Length: 291
Image (cartoon, rainbow, N blue to C red; front, side, top):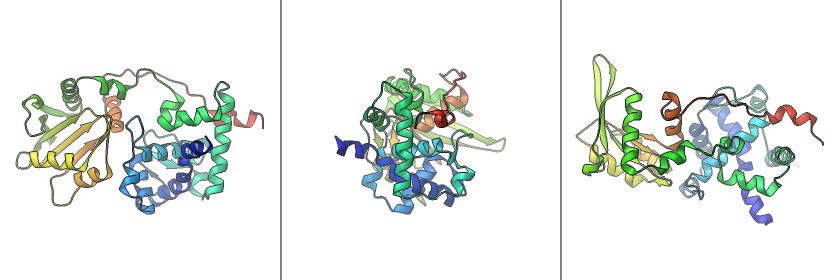
């Protein structure tokens, strides 16, 4: 049991590297950018980056997201701007070693254990192992990504068609049922009144990881037919798939993973209804808890 507990707290080792990565990126970055900077600086191998949780999401990126959450609770990261990880004034001057990171981790696990009196420390860590930070704090039984993963493959293509239209594309057509070399549809994106171009898209209703070879197959199918391609998935992309999508000298392919897809639905308010939610700020109450 002790060995399992240490495994579940593996994300603690990313505390210091995340602060360092954000400093290297000018003090702020998008989640994927910050995570990739850590991987680059520490020379993490593909086996580590591509490991998945039971839920299908990337174990590494989930762990870095939890590192970010603990640093935010500690006041080392600024949470005021949604979708951006930024250092606070305190965080800019803070450098963490393993012992200091461990102390922050134990402090906030204990705070959450006291706040959730029906939860043991192990139960809290088990929740964190398989969930993203937002899900841990505000569990929603109707999770958007789970809903998208539950629709039919053709239904997902039609939903993506609607999303592209809401995002500014014109003449969006779904062709997926014709098995057109992996192309599920196409549309026109107008940059300005003088410039527009055709975009091909592929929809993958996945819980797992899209591989490099799948990105390469999609590019081969689109060569000579469009200058731009988009792969939309409810899953994730392997690090090799990301490299393949951005390979020099080849048509660029935009990758939309489950996390980005949810944000796009929220941005255009498609299939979601905005509402005000008050989240308990445990950092405010921390000084008043029993020591």
